[in-house]
Image (tube, rainbow, N blue to C red):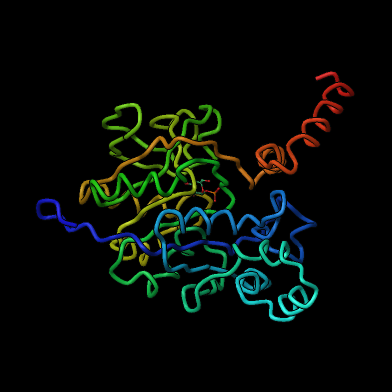
Length: 300
Ligand code: G1P
């Protein structure tokens, strides 16, 4: 695709940073990756991969760490299990496994050897990215949307190229938990971004529009990440290098249609369980009864 001088390469690669310790979910995450925690019956990583696939992504790169190999096993063929299920004629269970299968050679895993921040995690994928645009999906941010959030962002990317991030409003007192955008133009859906600050105090925040865990980035970002400058929390922040791309190429924020569940927090994770169970035909009615029961008991 070509627009003026700007060549817009198709987006086919995604990086999924999954190296974090998941300390907010200890002790559960002592011996299992937080991205393997299930919402209903699928691990968080599966939702992120599904959303990426639906947006046209063909190649995946997991940035993992020690103790997180079960994420890689999850996408492998579980030969003994499949064989056993086949012998027993358990077609339903075989069908349930289907989403976790991935085309041979389309998933790579790299290790972030030290927890130096999200920017460093993304930089670890530089060889995988090469000269191509790439998406970053943070599986903690579970987004219920149709079409998926990344697919909505791809529409914007295919039109303008450059960089696209998903944004959503947060209460002003929460700006210090997010990357916050400075807005130069806002048509209610699409935002032209003129600045980005990682985790500003409310009084220093340029808006209450936060970046959430979906990004389409230009490969040039790797040059800035390579400097390994430390930012908020003394970590190498992705936001700081994104900010350096502003002015050099298009940089848009998209108020996507959908609901984001912050599965990095306990309350958000529990809300996601309820919301996703209510969407399932096999669970909807029992879930409603359970909710009614507790709503009465607690006099909510
Ligand atoms: C990361 C990013 C931040 C973004 C957030 C979205 O922060 O650094 O800019 O707003 O994800 O979930 P973290 O949640 O890792 O602290």
